[in-house]
Every structure is written in structure tokens, then in C-alpha cells.
Length: 207
Image (cartoon, rainbow, N blue to C red; front, side, top):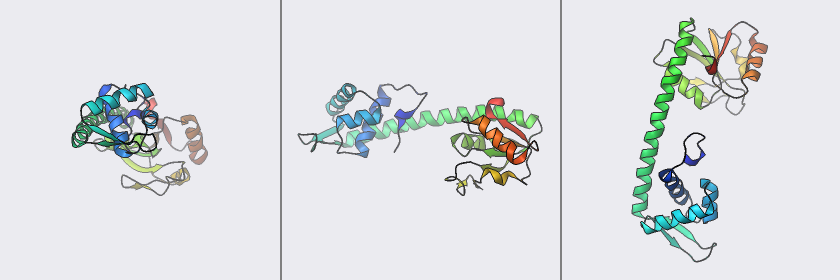
């Protein structure tokens, strides 16, 4: 389920809230306004206003007279509005991703200028995805990716298999780039415990 209302940086506006309400209805027709409010992080009064607006525009219909029997359905017009909002939302996200990729690429150039051309990534999450994408256009080779989370180990990541940090031993690399913004000091300590001072450790915030 797409949850546009979980963003920490994108301030919700009217279109954003409308999208979240339409998504909530699309994903679960038998849903109360209280549940929609909880899912969309809106107040019950705001949800009530949006429901009235959506009904007025004939984008949703309601059936049932009690909370137990009440259900909402998107009309063809509502489906079209949802798709339109999703496309605009996706376009904004793609533009933000492209901007983030450019910023990360500029940071990676600092590594390359220091003579670092082969790295292992520590942290298999969204930031690592951006780093991997940015590195494709630069003289930087990603040799391995590791993560402390056992649930991620063994999974594929852009052609590489996510490994345990202990697997860093014996790998040929110029540096380790920590792509996680959480627990960086702890991660640095773990790397030093495994490899000592045999390899440089960088974080994106260092660059």
C-alpha cells in the first residue's frame, strides 16, 4: 500500500490529503471515517469534510446506514481522480529522487578524488539504493553490500547478495561507505572490530 502521508519532509496539502483518503477507500471499502482518519493522520472532522467533498464531486458512493454496514466505493470518476493524483505524486517523488541522486553523486566524487574507487556499502536500505544508482555514472565500483539485519542477509540487492558484516574480511576494497544514517558510531565500531584499521571508513555525512 502506498502511504504518501508518512513523509517526514513533504508537507501535506489539499491534494495530498485527498489522495490519502481516496487510497484508504480504494484499499478497504468497508471502512469507517474514524479508521480513515487513523490511516491518513487526519482529524475526524477533516475526514468528514473530505468525504462530503468527494461525495459532492461524485467520486465516491456510500452504502449502509450504520458503522457496521457502512462502506465506501470509488466511482469511475473517483478512480480517474485517484490515478491522476497518483501520477502527479509519482512525478514529484521521481524529481526528488533525481535531486537526491545528484547530491549523492557530488558527495561520491569526493571519495573518488581521494583515490577511492572500490567500496563496500554498509546498510541495505533506501540510501544505499541512491548511492548505487549514483555510482553507475562515476568511477566507483561497489564490491559488496553488508547489513547487520539477519532478515536482509542473503537477499539480492542490485546484482549483489547482502552479506553479514563479518564477510567483509578478505574483500578487496579501498573503503567502506556507511549508507545508514542511524547508529553510525556503533557501525564504525563494528567495522573496526572486524577489520581493525585495515580499511578507511566513510559516511555520507563526512563527504
